[in-house]
Length: 359
Image 1 (tube, rainbow, N blue to C red):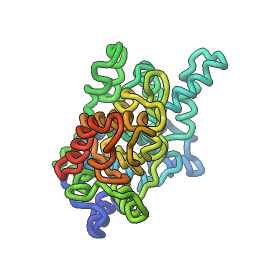
Image 2: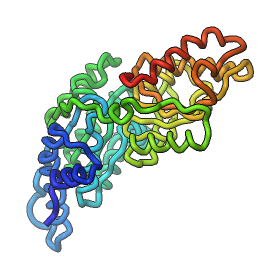
Image 3: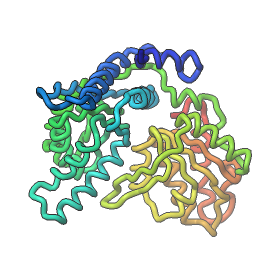
């Protein structure tokens, strides 16, 4: 007899892999209902007479799980995803999914398709019965213009959607351009998905860093191992996947992102010609940045130093948690040359961001 999600969750607690949380536990029966329907209908379709008689049972409502950062939303979705024994299932970051959709639309338009969205939707439907999205948020008007029609097609085809978000549906694409066009999508989400707030009082991502060392200098093998250990704890051992963020008609690509935690080197974020808009997009998409190999800053890398100052200012304003390895302590990173005097403010912020109550 198969285990329920609640039983699997309780086993994880008993093994010390999770902390007991009543709010998290209360969501599991709802996810288990969706899981049971998916598995039962999949088994029926695999049967010899599957699909020959009668209409398939209508799909259950999906789940829109929202709440503050670090409450365990993604962990619950991953637990559900892993335990659901069907073949056509997919878990993907919402940004990444929408980038795939936009590329599919571009390809369909080149074929002069009457409705470019139709082949894109059909491709998703053919491969997917369960679609799990991490961190649903809409920031791009191109996405806002098509999500309503796309999701209507997916829901009508019986695709079950489970998603996490930091925002209640009514706050999606808030203050966005031409938002009135987007409002039917919000209504559709409420109609076809159960909207559940995860009200846990504990921010587990913050808890992992509470009082922990988050600045490692001078950078070396021991510091690299310590940084990798923090990354593993924050991501559950996931290596991370690439994520592209739309920025003024182009893309900012991050190589390693998982569940709101990004890992990058100083050179990836400060040697490229990035600006405030890029760092704002980054800060809006993550809650923790693991930044490695910050060098001593001098006149020889003045442009990189300027970008680093802008990056830190943006992370500071957005209250993003920073874990970093560097050549030296913040106060000794930039001690001579143009910009050294102004860097004192950045060093002060870096110190403040190391505090146990930061974030």
